[in-house]
Length: 313
Length: 298
Image (cartoon, rainbow over all chains, first blue to last red; front, side, top):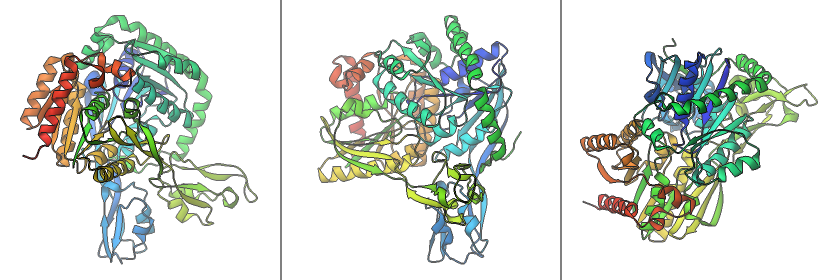
């Protein structure tokens, strides 16, 4: 069984079925006795819990470091404002202003302050939850409304990947920093698309991203039959595997709408997920060596992230 | 001049299809695609690009291999794991550092702390933005580079350019296509707008995501209306969404049925109102009229 394997489920275009695939795959493989973990990294709009319905055992706040200035000690030298690239700390006439929402926690200001007047203080950017859902180990992040540190929260969720599990990461839509953070270090990426012009356009962008990051990947076409065959032509021309075609079936849409797992209510789709699972089992063999290298590197740097969960379980 | 932003929280609810139809229905509007991560509006509006500009949202560090002494100070100060000890040898050391440009967030600490000034700090090209003509009027849009950051800054830039064009050409409306989620590009696309139209679908996910998006617009005090797309997929949830909107004092500006013509119009590179002549078109026209009505000064 593919233990110690990290699969990211991504898409580019939103609403193509990432969560459907990720939750069904987790649920289905757990039923077969696979040790499986589902990690919801779509922290802006997390929906995995709607389908997996986990019993939450534990939750905690996730914080990042932002500067706190001790005005008693501050000499108004302005070095903090000079080093900050994000305008998160500004020094105007011996007055220091901080803008926490713009801060990237690079630590520049508190490192450089010659008067030792700046200290990092925690800023709560969201929550993380841990639970169990019919055999699936559940971890989910949820960004606080009005906060922008999506990648930091994703990083925190990914710290809880269990090495002896099949870990399934539900990636946010798009192609920029949150997606990069969510797929980084995955052993394999499943790209979900739909056979429409928007689906294809966004698929191409995401393929560009995973290629840039040197990640092996394959494609799943959802709502197969709804549009045209351009996605298939593209995959053939680019020599990309299509692992699964999930048909455009109103019953799937209806099951989804009420938060149900497809493989539980429409048993004819068990076959598709069984094939997907078989495909995943085969992936491992091909990239095992690469992975060992990656894990070594990861251990060396020891997840030196600036984010932390205040109550690690 | 009024600015209306179409967002959704959940992806794939039909933002872009609705914006393209609004573009066709509006007489005097500037169009702005602020979904810079996955910009699709151009596929329907087929813009004729008049101006192309590079977009730089920040800087990136890069090691000058010949100068690097492999001391590791860059790795020590980097909070983003971007300094990697995997570079080629030079005259001094067997191995040098490189900066992983995907991981680098452009903070410049390595540049500052490098004892031998071996790290350069250059403007990053994060993407391109365009001013174009379309069959419905001027359009400002962009393409974010692969695995790039600063999408929020690019969104702000597109909105600023759109406003400038609207002022120059005497346009009284700006229609903005937003991105999914509630994070930095979404915040950048809605702050200061006159109206947000939140497009949702009647699924538990859609409902849940709408809750978060509406909390966001409330946080930034932006007037918000709701549209339920594909409402007949689950009439029960549609009713629940309408009820909750009412409780929150949000207007439901329209409901649209699930119709394969939406996909067919997309394939034909036409907006729904150009492609379809049945009830679907009427629903979108009525949604648009309702949006204009909300925008009217009371």
